[in-house]
Length: 146
Image 1: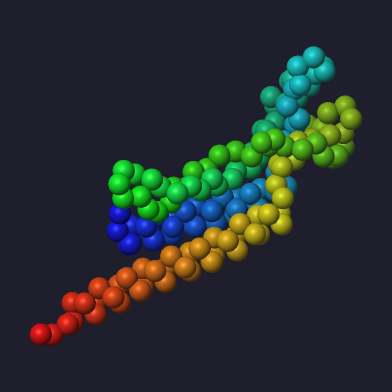
Image 2 (image 1 turned 60 degrees about the vertical axis):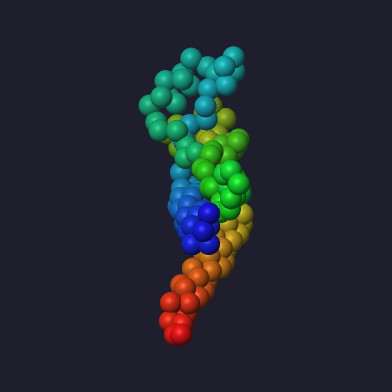
């Protein structure tokens, strides 16, 4: 795997990390009805939860080293859901609140999301510098006169 493709995979992972963190931050207040919990759900709660959209399901980026054959390098980033995806939050004024006044709120930690943004920023900068250095080195090698 070339230096360029390794750095490019890092740029892609950083970009994905920014997109996921931005989505989580933008939807931090997107609540919905609490999912029915089987036996404790009343007759009216299932009709209430189906009438309103579910709470936003937060995402996370899982990033691992890419290992392919004899020339490993780069990174692979995948998106998965956070588990548990929601926490119970008190909002008795919501139309979809249960009998206790609780709704499902996304399980998003804002501090962690801002750390993810900072990590992505510095990862992007570092990988862009690698591409810049690679480009300058290649250019200087091509300019050698004999």
